[in-house]
Amino acid sequence: MLNFTTEIWNKRNLPKRDNPIVVLDNVNSVPQFNFPLVTSSIWSIVCLKGEIRLTVDLKEHQLTPSSLMVMVPGHTISSYSCSADFEGFAINTTINSLESSLPLLSRILICYKVFNEDPILKISQTDLQNQILFRDLLRNKLAERKTTYNKLILGNLCEAITVETLSLYLRRLQPNAPASIKRTRAEELFYKFIVLIEDKFRYQRALSDYARDLCISTKHLSTLVKELSGRTASSWIDSYVILEAKQMLANTDLSIQEISEHLNFANQSFFGKFFKHNTGKSPTQFRKEKTL
Image (cartoon, rainbow, N blue to C red; front, side, top):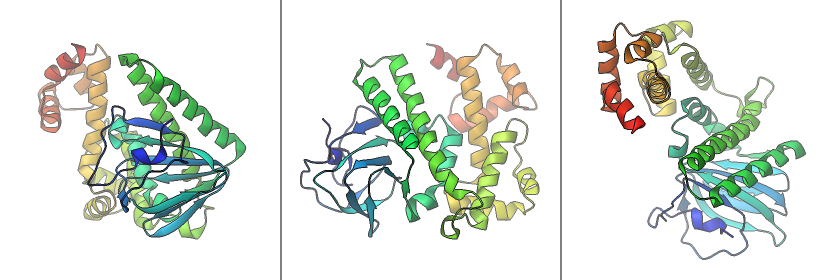
């Protein structure tokens, strides 16, 4: 059985892993580590029985039965301990394993403040059973022989449990959420910006159009998106366009001309230059490599 601590790593001693997704079941046999430990992936920890205490970013957190905690890259763990009767599990996944789902990554980013300030949730028995079900599915697939289909299923399961977990946190960001965890004005605008991109990226790529939709200046939008996400607003728009183009090139028989029209480029040549600028490959080269 995997040990909880073997997948939390020190910056100076990063263990190698074959899988970007790991299910952890045992926290009782803990080797000595030099704290602090820095997370570089996404953690979802569920307590079924007893309790576990973690000091994260100099703040102590306690998980009790039917509670869930999410940590994202960049957290510093100073210490942890668990009661003798503790039972629980953790699911660990890398950011790279979710890179095919930009909407999912954007939702994770929107929840960063919640994960940082108040990362523990008490969940219902139904939600707890859902977490257990996903854990069992992931564990079973991880134990199977690695095939192309197995990797695809694992990726989809990973996205599904991430969405399931995010939905629990996003409930706390509704209008009736406590004031301490409501989004700031800038965070609210960023959230609306991401939602607008998901709805309009196929035909609207000018940042000024999104700023107009949000009733703010282009400069203001650029500044707040960069400050909150570390990425430019234009790069968010382009990423959605590129992801859609990649999926169509790899998974459909549409011609490059038809794809460029679907994404509302002026012509195939302009689409080709845009795609190569963002990926380093022409659409034709990308399609050939994906179909080999």
